[in-house]
Image 1 (cartoon, rainbow, N blue to C red):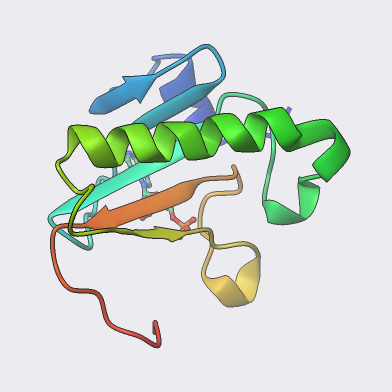
Image 2 (cartoon, rainbow, N blue to C red; image 1 turned 30 degrees about the vertical axis):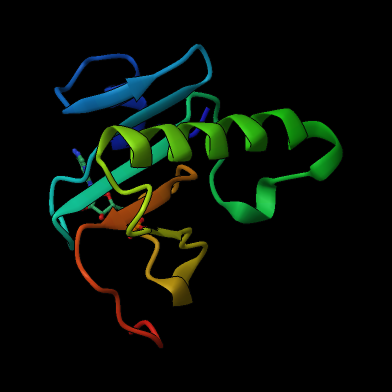
Length: 115
Ligand code: AMP
């Protein structure tokens, strides 16, 4: 098992502001928000990054992650204005926590290209 700070959040050993939870997915507020809404959506299973996703094995989980993202967007009132989903994977992306997570960012106009 890859032990990270997110493993501890999943096990409720350290606190997090959880906004949405299902059997397989957890969504909680980023501790260092980059937008008025910044929520991290993670699988509860041990997946380090996007390279560990295998379509045939994880299709259902990916669906659940996107369902959760859309649910969070609704709960946060972002449905109409929109939002950005980001997955950092690996060193060049700036990934800091080696547990797959989708950043959901919203509540302000986003810039493109990203930094
Ligand atoms: P990444 O750079 O894509 O790996 O993103 C990791 C994110 O996790 C960063 O945006 C951090 O601010 C966030 N983060 C780290 N520790 C915590 C924590 N204990 N609770 C909530 N968010 C965290």
